[in-house]
Image 1: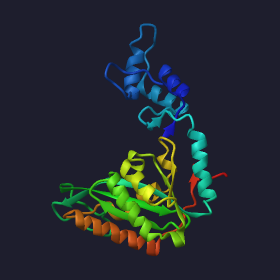
Image 2: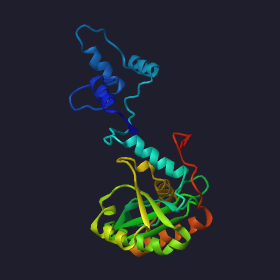
Image 3: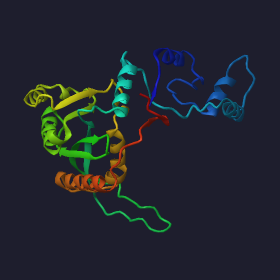
Image 4: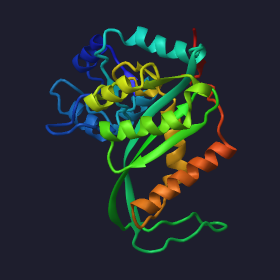
Length: 274
């Protein structure tokens, strides 16, 4: 995702790189542009190969695009620096964790068996499947070790967050782990009455460090979710919620035992600064 300033956004719309071929057309080919330019009364005929050559020389690629996002939080930069500072200098009074949900994991059962990987042939997965609902995973990654704690639920409301905080509170006793500093987005469940009631019942146990708006990429748990998707969920087939739940928790146990490690976190290849 590319972040653009409002001025850049307005300039991009005021100065389109390529004329549109006609009404309703969003992406032009070189043939479209050549035809449109050749229709002008004061212009000579131009071939699509000439347009393509000019595009190559100018490094213009109309068929490619990226999502962009106009930042709306005026404090985005200082809030981002505060999160990066936490990564480099964790609070001395406790444990720094990255918390988030991975909602809507499909419980899908393949209708037919696929074909396994074989020499000269890639694995094949059956396209048709039966849906058995969805599963929500709440997880917290310990920044210093990469260890991940997770629980599966049918939904991800404030009620489930309280259940998760209870489990985290028991798994990381205050005597050994101190204050739990949670880096998280500022979803409504974080400040809901149920969560506030839990916080009041456990004073000083949890401190929230909220990400800036549209700053979820600053949360290291997102890196682990990406690994989870590729190594645990891709191509799977499950008959019901419980089967997928056991599969996810088994992977989590394997990950913590064999692969857990702190991330050498960078932004665009550059190390974090204090």
